Amino acid sequence: MIFRRVNTWPAWQWRNQWGEMDRLRKELNALIDGSYDKSMMEPSAGVFPLMNVTEDTNNFYIRAELPGIKADELDISVTGDSFSISGERKIPEEQSNSKYHRRERESGRFNRILNLPSQIDTSKVEAGTSDGILKVTLPKSETAKPKQITVSGV
Image (tube, rainbow, N blue to C red; front, side, top):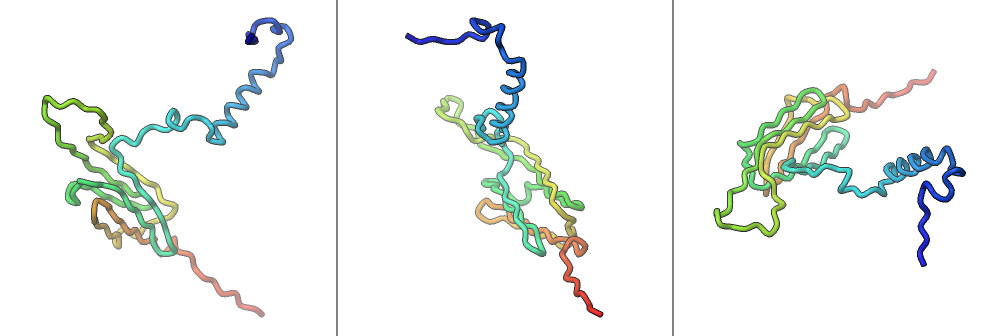
């Protein structure tokens, strides 16, 4: 036999007045720990390109997956500490009598803006594509680079 406790019976008069706060605390902890279902929380990327951003002492490097998009179809801009990329992914239509079994590739316009941790020297930015991967090198401005300071003793 299975017993199930109903919130209002039989212990409704002994219910903890802080129970709702405890439930909320547990849900917030689960959210922070990432134990909630991620597919419910994170919006799908849609037609946004997937990107990796790395840095070394002199440059930021951005690598974006853009298969099927030509270099002249992209709009890239850099201002201060912001990188922007926009374009359109076009997927040819199937025959009119075709029936999809699975449709995962999205088409349409995209626009992504990334804020970087320091200023960029916009006059030295380089970009190129190879095998559907866009590679952008963003040199850090001289004021953003770390400086070695010598300490003199008396």
